[in-house]
Image (cartoon, rainbow, N blue to C red; front, side, top):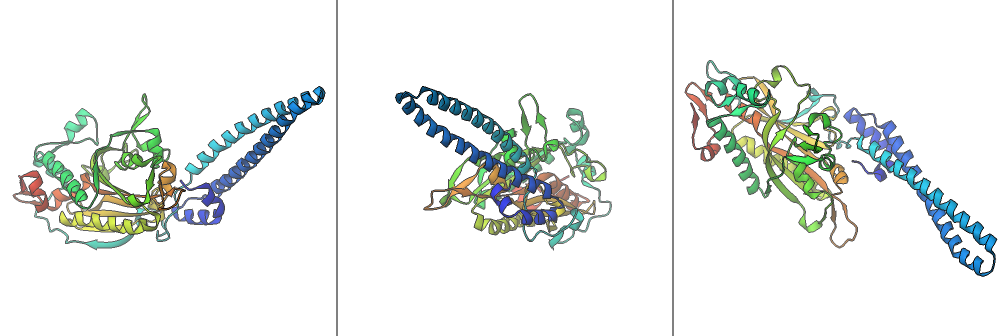
Amino acid sequence: MLSVKFIKENPEFVVERLAVKNFDAKELVDAVCAISNRKNEIQQEMDQHKAEMNSISKQIGQLFQQGKAEEANAAKAKTASLKEAIKELEKEFGEKDVELTDKLTQIPNIPHESVPSGKSEDDNEVVTTEGEMPQLCEGAIPHWDLATKYDIIDWELGNKITGAGFPVYKGKGSRLQRALINFFLDEARDAGYMEIMPPLVVNEASGFGTGQLPDKEGQMYHITEDNLYMIPTAEVPVTNIYRDVILDEANLPIKNTAYSACFRREAGSYGKDVRGLNRLHQFDKVEIVQVQHPEKSYETLDQMVAYVTTLVQKLGLPYRILRLCGGDLSFTSALTFDFEVYSAAQEKWLEVSSVSNFEAYQANRLKLRYRPTGEKKPVLAHTLNGSALALPRILAALLENNQTPEGIKVPEVLVPYCGFDMID
């Protein structure tokens, strides 16, 4: 979240920039300033009362020694009155502190200056489009029919076991899925990311730290009895490794990668765009996460975008990179680039990755800091993450784009991982 200091020093800037996200922050910004000012007033009153009480306490013993019992008792009554006043002020201070935190969590991150204006995904800026569009064979079909034809994904079985959006991968489908995961993890390790195997459920503090709570609570599966949440992405547990941590500047950047299953309720999703692998409640993804020095985070963002580019290129998929407009930017992101691959049989672009810089927004919620070399006071780090990659739509595009009359060709880079070059 944004810091109180930054908001109070730049109230007009905050309101102006958040308008790019189509968010009217005026009322919240005013409230944050007013509540913070009141907290400062309360603190000053408490400090004054405590100073007065200490001064009077020193006088009480002297008054008794001087035989001035009446004055001493009056002084004791005064200290009791001050203690009660301090108690009431402490109560109000606590209430204002809770109120302030509530207001701060409702304010999104400020978009980077390069974020274009816009209201929806239709206004996103296409940065680049690369790769050759596949020429499909006669009678080409979408991936959900291919999966059934070659018996590699069972939609009905998943529906029977759990419900819609939970497919069962079978045979070569399972092996290809595992091949993609291992390929992505190996590529990430070769790029300097340390592999993590995180829990698939997190507590409320972790969900708050990365910004899923309270903003996206309705999209997360909640285990109510234990107050735990199934993760929507490995970003959540991996980034929370560094919650309440002070790093040494020399250890930056921190680079982690993790494979996990991801769980999203996708409430409100319906229609043709959710067919097959296009939108699932459970899916697999390899994530990359970095904790970086604030002065280097945008250079790092470019590097992460370049890295994800190599993955889709090695898979031989046509792709495009989008800079998200303000209206499509997430609550916590300052700048996001989306990757989409072209799905030939569906004749549409499918999102397969988001690579984002959160600047200090998550770090402030996480209390994730680093200590500059030679300095005593720690400062907030910057956090970044990206999908590298999300499997369902990658798999959908691979199946559709590589179909032939003889079967589905497996990309050359995956053959060593899955042990076959054709699904037939």
